[in-house]
Length: 495
Image (cartoon, rainbow, N blue to C red):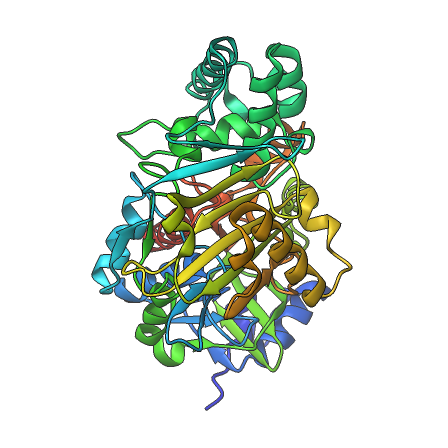
């Protein structure tokens, strides 16, 4: 049944009635248009949530628990956003999107436990392999490839400097750091080249940027990198670069049994008919302290809105009245990373027989970092390969079949001839997807945080912002998405 808004309550305009009335409140043209649109609303709720990724679902769940009438509008034909698992012919599941969790990611893990989704520690037994620029393979154990004492000390000193600088960056307002202007005036690349004299240490830091941040060091602000380090913790554990970049004991320590997509689908089941798929939001009209959210085939009126999208996608919605200039400028300067994931599935994890843990870091190739992505029981094998930054952009115009072959060529180079014939192959090209346009994390170039960062969470009228890119801990990760959604909901419930 269609529920109509009351035009007068929407506009907050009263008309003087009766004989002798001399004046009447007159609506502006914009208010009149908003009233007409509101009168055509299909549904009236307390809060509309735009986006059914982890952030939007977490926000809706908390709002419903708080007694609010909620509707979630999702553009895709599925929930989860950049969290998406696929079923394999062998009965298994592979994470096409986000997949890792680790220490201090408390909200995500608590939510998963509540929903009955367990975690397991990723496979780390055996050696990793580092491929140098000339293709030389170096096997090693531990967190870092072998290097001479001078290089090791230089890298350790650089990491210490980054952690020290990161400790001065407030996680909720990095633009207020004591040296924010100076830090935001340079790229991560320029800092590395200007502060690290050792060639090997510089190479590793540039590789960290590509592999752990999914962006080239020349593209990102040093202040953003320091912020990203600072938020890799929680309220009682300060962030540090080691936790951000590590597997065992770090951000890539663990995975979810059966995949994290279950977290999204289980929340969706709880929301039931409050969730509408294939409903991309095109326009949000505000007037009189209310909003009309217009999606394809559906319009919903509400007293508050949570836009749980990455800034670059949120900026593609038409707003009336227009968003504050700083917010709009921010959305124009906050891209998602160029990233693709490829997973080759095999009958068994054959690399383990050679004493390898499946982890490769390489200075050449289409894919330059790999991981063992097999299930916890090792009943079949899976190698995960990332294409980050320049590598993802280099294959943008190539077919999926061509990208698959390029990845398999690399895996053969890294792990031998058995890698050439997977039983299945999964490819997620996130920067090519209409409702993604990139993967985690989003990042900023020099000058953006200090000039426009204040708008990242600041409400615009009745519109609140959520999404992993707005989080104050584990920004860009699933943990950050859950935290951001719950925070936006808490702000609305507090009124």
